[in-house]
Amino acid sequence: MTSCPRMALTVFAILAAALVGAGCGQNAERVPTYPSMDADASLKVVTDNAHKVHTLTGTGLITLTRPDGQSVRLDAALAMQPPQRVRMRAWKFGRAIFDLTVTPEGVWAVMPDDDSNRREQIHSAGVSAARLAKTWSVLSGGFFDSPNLATDVSGSKIVVKRASPDEAVVTCEVDRKTLTPRKYAVLDDNGKERFTLALSAYRQYGDVVWPTKLLATSEGGTVEVALREIDINPELTPDAFKPPRRAEKLP
Image (cartoon, rainbow, N blue to C red):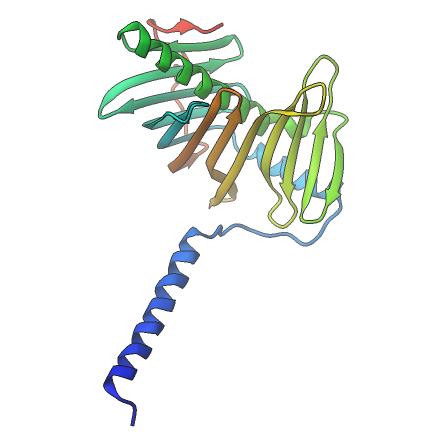
């Protein structure tokens, strides 16, 4: 007959394993997978999926980290209309930090009135966030429509390269199993990465698969975005991407 202590340990072990399994399941990506295909067929799926997203809204957290390691975490909300329109607002403890608007005509920002030192820090953070938002919107909305893309199948990923005259070279790593973009990189003339945008934690929203975590890295530091409550293709108001009156156009 099994002793009570041994039975208790067995039950505890089973419950612990179940909890660990449940935790892993919640963190794992639950997205469609595809059979092995050649590069052309794979890119067609990626392109078709990108075309499904016309508008997007979401809330979450944005963490901005400077090269010296100093960081700030903010609540954020965004609206996007790929490939060239984004609105991002950030606040902390209910206090507005910045309000960014990205359109084909440029980038506008509203910064709070504050002492010059803090204003400069906020301005730098806003510029970094704007670059992330603009790059993400442009790449997600049109990268795979670019002409003369070069592809290289390497194990579990497809590396897609765009090299256009008078533009920086951009590469994208696509996961072959889920056919989702995982990393964009902007290269300099020597082939060195100057800006990267990593996409992860994909989730399925209807027939659209979209990342909920983004990490942009450059010489100016990192910008990390963790999204929640994402809404795909909502109807946006006509002035959703109209810069506020107090907004300043960034250089």
